[in-house]
Amino acid sequence: MATPAKELVPLLDKDGVRLTVEDALATVTLTNPAKRNAQSPALWRALAEAGRLLPGTVRLVVLRGEGKSFSAGLDRQMFTPEGIEGEPSFIELARSGDAELDAAIAGFQEGFTWWRRSDVVSIAAVQGHAIGAGFQLALACDLRVVANDVQFAMRETSLGLVPDLTGTHPLVSLVGYGRAAEICLTGRFVGAEEAVTAGLANIAVPTADLDAATHDLATAILDAPRESVIETKALLRGAADRTYDAQRTAERAAQSRRLRDLAGLGE
Image (cartoon, rainbow, N blue to C red; front, side, top):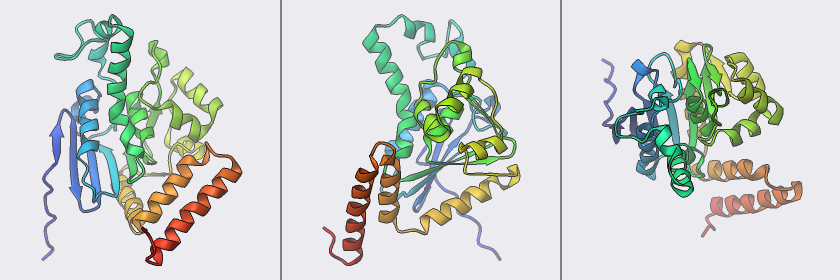
């Protein structure tokens, strides 16, 4: 008889976000499929809290959304005069002072910044709609596995806003300025095939295979020694900001650390 899978007790389960951890693998799940995982300030705070709660044993984080859509973007109630209960409306935010408004947006961004930290690798498993804030959340991760029905779109500019949840930097890095500008300024949908071709996604699979493909990618990454993954990720993340010669120097320094560690001579 097969051993039943053990049920994981969430470290966090609130405001549309659930965090579970099993050994070196953490899973962050958006848990409001009835609203297509629409996002709110409470959800962003919960995402930031999930990052703070990650145990030091975690090497890889999978981000996923329940239901047919990964995340359809901002909760439209945020655009109404009354906003979301317990949260300042956009109108109230606009009336605040410069420092207060900047601090509020910086707080929103915190839920999107920790996914690329050096000691973990993050994978977004994306199906259905990933619009606006949903697109930016997927872009916050290191890697993206998408279902064939995925629909990316950056709608902020069409709504009179800008993408401000850390999505512009990775978007330009992945697809280049011209393609990024066209995607953002038109607000059009980007499907699975284009996403893979343009570099937005690493692989596209049938929707039924999304979890399995994500698991396979996670397993392959976890098979590599942790310190070599951390060093390699740091080299790749910093490459765009270094000259060719500076990158060569960084490679030599990283390899020296790895060789000494493997030889038992590390600090």
